[in-house]
Image (cartoon, rainbow, N blue to C red):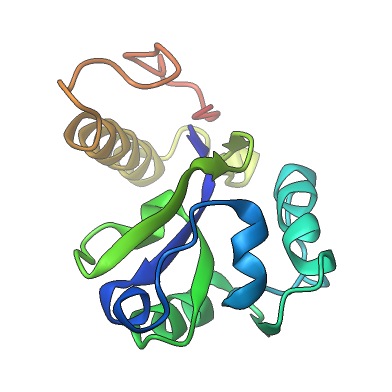
Length: 159
C-alpha cells in the first residue's frame, strides 16, 4: 500500500482567502504541516521542504498529521495531509490538485513470533480489505488498486 501527501484547505478558509492556482501563489497563504524535524519518509521530506523554504508568509508546524487536520478543518490555513486522513471530511477541498508527494510505502509490521497468530492474521486481512475498499470507493470507476494489485497473497508487506 502507498499513501500520498496532498494540500487541503477548508471551504471556509478558501472563501475568505481564495484558492491558490499555482505553487507560487501559496506565498500569500498560511501553511500548516508536520514539522520536518519529525521522523518522516524521505519522499515526504523532499516534497514538504520546498514549501517551507520558499518564503511563505506564515507557517504552523505540529508534531503529527492529527495536529494538522484540526487546524485545517478550523480554517487556520492550507495543510499538507496524507490522502487517507482527509476521508470523511467533505468540508476539505484539495488545493493544487496536480501537487502531491511521491508514493510513500506503508507496511504492517509485527514481531516475527506472531507470524502464525490467528489474531494478527485476522487483523492483517481486515486492514487489507479496508484498504482495497477505500481505494475502490475513492477511484473514479472503482476497479483494482492504483498499483494494480488485487491480492496481497498473505504477505506481511502491503505495498
